[in-house]
Image (cartoon, rainbow over all chains, first blue to last red; front, side, top):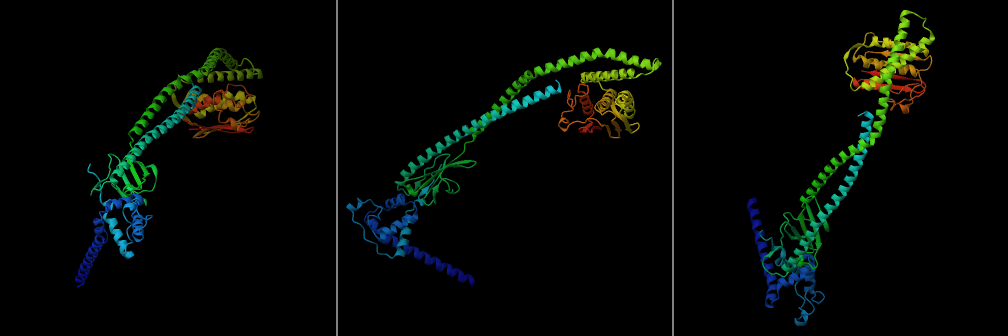
Length: 121
Length: 384
């Protein structure tokens, strides 16, 4: 009986986690990347710009969050000349908690640690 | 070579070689440290060069957008990159390294160089480069220094030996002259002394004359001369002398020698006390035993007070001669056994008595102990 309860609990938790992950994944794609794609925004390049300036994920996360909540030239990672050609984006209308999850996902997706490998000797 | 010559040569060599060794060690150490630093500096330069190399490759990698980014790895070198919070990003080390120092540092086997990156290519704020320390040149340097020290040691030892010989040559000449003089003198003295003593014995034997005070003095003086002659001959021939070890009744011999010295002792009004274990035997050469006892008695008589006591004690394990004489100052006790050393020059003699005693004692591995108090007396004890 105990076994059945344990197995059922485990299955429920796994299913919930998968659903949550799928939801989140869909959220990043829907909320951010789909639009980036349409506008041909090079995500990797943007990420590398953050990386070269801030180095740590904590600081990058903070910088992206601040910019998305309050898009201004002083918070952006792009050079000021960029905004002579392109308009400044509007402040994002997503609640903080969810936005933080999306930023984390973004950081995880483009993380260079995952891409780095040692060449075969 | 005489003992004093040997001692002087050894002292000279110790000082000369010691100071040369110290000087060479200091020079070699300075050279070793400077060369070692130079070798390490070369390796550090290599590290810095490779760090710059990796930095330029990271810059290139930062602008590469492939799915896989190949970390710049250089043969024999290991490297790792860290973010601004010093968190490990990636590297070629087998085990994840920790960043807790900056600049150059090393442990027993590896040398490390940590430099800052600006801007942060791939997020890397710090770069750590490491290389195994190449100890071969250092080992080779150590080997060369050891060979040099050995070579210098041999050359300077030979040089020191000849220099030492050169320095002690005047001392050797003086000693040789003195020895030759003593040898010649003793040789010339032997015949007249023997004649005098033989004639005194004849006079006594035939009772030609009453033994007068004058005759006694002649006998004492002749015996003193005879003993000095025996001592000097003993010292001169000591090295070539063949010892015939036999069982000697030492109690009897002491009694005989006391009789021999009785005239001399009486002349000084000494009271001789004999506490001898009867028929004690000792395995010793007869001449050595006579020289030992004679010198002990002679010293005790010579340096005693007029009408003093002279005690001779013979036990199963020791022989002691105790006088109530002038004694020896504490500062002179250490040097008293050296030849020609006399703590008190008020009495005649060459200062060879205790030297002979010491030589006999050393030859038979006996133990000599001298205790003395100035103006109270001296006790010379020989244990076997």
